[in-house]
Length: 410
Picture 1 (cartoon, one colour):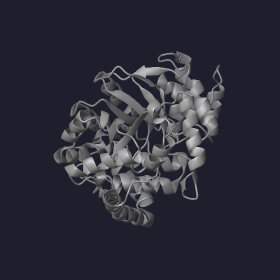
Picture 2 (spheres, one colour; picture 1 turned 180 degrees about the vertical axis):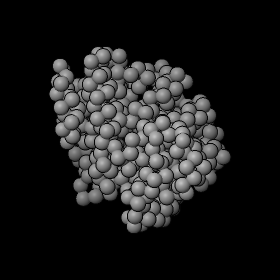
Picture 3 (cartoon, one colour; picture 1 turned 90 degrees about the vertical axis):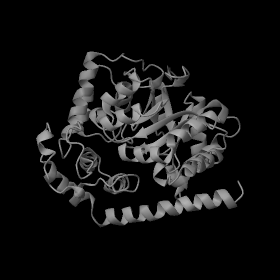
Picture 4 (cartoon, helix red, strand yellow; picture 1 turned 30 degrees about the vertical axis):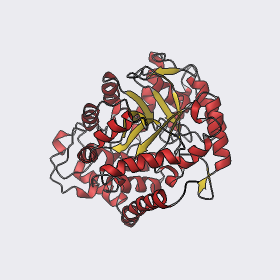
């Protein structure tokens, strides 16, 4: 397993990490036996970084990892988990969640502690609540070793957060389709220049870039002199960029671990040829041609004076036509943009002022296309899910407080 260097600490870390958000489930819960065996198998293969979060698998991921890393496995890995900022109402809440996560993970410290899915508005709110002092104190008292944040907004917002605290690392969504979306290539390079370790999530878009590909994509890959699986093409493209420190993969069976580990043994930076890059560019452009709205995520239309996250609205709308999964897309849209995890930035907030139209290099009728997004993604299911999430999350928060205070540990 190849490794790269964490810039600020000079520690080595494997280029492949294990994302614990897509573990196998059985009867609505993590399949304990098979998932434990899989995690330990991956560690034996050299995948010694595991990433989780408070909310993964409906709160089951952290406690599962605490059990899976018993018998000496915790000492062999580095762990990252995340502070769920949307549940934080005070400075004291930050300590509550971190201390609870230490208990759930059965560990005395977190190697990489990230503010989860923070954006411009939510970062300002967390700063006002004292998150920078919290992170400083948690590092000082040894509960965390490195501080970072995960991110899903635009490049300019990303850069501002990078500059606002002496972070050790960040976690961004980045792949051959999202090269210019969210933080994007520009954000990747910016963070690396600031000596942040850059971890990558969604390298295969939840596996969609690796299986059941459109025939147009398969024809392009068939032209390559060296035959590789779609997953290998996507991973090698990421690891070819020296700014990428580590790629997280949500592996859920032995074959995926074996394939990814084999690729990670030879995926040196700057090793792809010009011809191979041309193939990858053709694949990416073909994927993007399947988009319903030709938005590149350039952010020139932002900020919207009425708070609409225009690129994210189009990204999720496009996902419906590129990958299907309407229920999942509706859920992500409602939770991420509907004010559950941060600001209210859905398509229906557009009033048609057209201040964005002249700024769009693609000439998109943004107000008209946002109306399409609203009609497709803000139906009855959206309102039910959004209301349910806004009710359920505070209940989950109060339940967690109750268990922490009154119930004994397992």
